[in-house]
Amino acid sequence: MPCLEISLPNTDTETKEKLTIGLTEAFDKATKFGAEIFGIRFHEYEFGQVASGGKLCDNNTPRPYLHMLLYCPRINRETKQNLVHSFTKAFTQAAGNDDWKPVIHICEHPYDNVGVNGELLSDAIEELKNQKFYYEVTDK
Image (cartoon, rainbow, N blue to C red; front, side, top):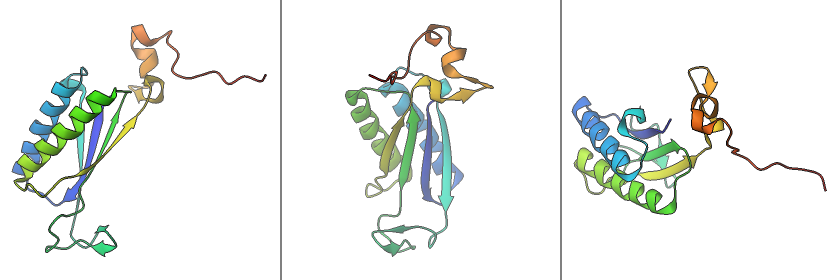
């Protein structure tokens, strides 16, 4: 299941709700997965608990440590470009600060690397049961 983890300074509930809506809509529009399977987890920190560029971030840091890590199945380059653009736009709008642009990492995985409800997704989804998600390594 696609999910997004976001590291950011402590943030009020209203901003997190805006982020949740904006990022979910961005994900839904850029991919074919659907909003209902997309999850978000916020990792909030106090200033002084993260560093960027060799300096601790504090209340005076113009651009705090902002990071997104998207876990998802393989997607093509155009979809990645759309996601990165859409996530950044949704984030800056919800945060209300055009200078707050997160670093975004996309961690792709095949369906047989994800377990949900006690089984691999490749076993849970009928059309994936006979599909190979890896290359056989054999001796010559």
